[in-house]
Image (tube, rainbow, N blue to C red):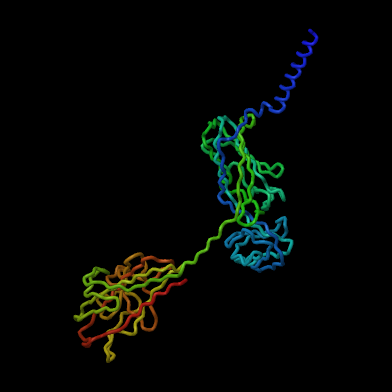
Length: 439
């Protein structure tokens, strides 16, 4: 009986030891303290992919058209790198003028090197990564370690974008990183097994639940991978973020994914517009250092009866709106001097603006009403009435703007003065204004 009981006890003891051994093998004690970070997100300054495409034909020095396997995500205005060989030992950088087709690019200027079917063309999409990490644990003098896939085709350090991951793009350590509100130590980077590993140490204590912002690429970012999925479908890349203690034990860890996808080209056509009006000015309006003696209309400037050696002043104002990229010019031209039907004239002021406040003759001056569009001003050079005469042989510029304009307005102040010897009668001429926008 005793012998049988003894066997049962031995069997139970061996079973218990075996169970404990399996527990330790399956669940190592070092893993019991590791958990997930409360939250992690990575915001890319741009999710636009890089491009790496083969030049498919001969491109001679001076050529601006480049045939390629695929223009992919390349857009007009992009800065692209042309490499004579696929190692990019000899390169030049050009600006894309337009994408002629899915397999052809036009450059703004001709190439300085010759290229063959062994050459490649690159677009490097540099992106700053902003990680916001909320730790689960309180850690003193630890590290944040960010591991992301690097390009495996040539390695993440060769400066050539690839399909499988991100590239260093010459990113500097420490000065190109920031950590807040924590205090950052000296950053180190490495690329084991073609991965990119960024180690950001911190000094002091980072408390549980206190969000930390890590910026990778403060001044020069990593470049994004070349995309392999169809256009409009994102490629995604697994990124691991670890927080370790001061003995390099992993305390918290989380994996996230970044997506890389083409930018959307949005096009819209703004219809050219031009609005130009000539506007009446009432009698007794203060303008150009004087007051008007009569009211004008949009189509007439009636001076009325003239008194010998006395200035007579009437005004209009011009208004213009245009969305022209290069702005506008408003010119004026007369059909001749103020004249009677028999040909007798009132002399015009000279074509060059001058002081004509006490001079006999006919002409005009200008004053800004809204913005600063007029070509000269009534009080230039401290003059009382700086003015000029209209020309019948060539138009004179009265207003202009080299950019799109909204509500540009200028006064045109007409002035006439006659001597005692001026023949009596009705004098008349026609002034034509032309507004021209340059698109």
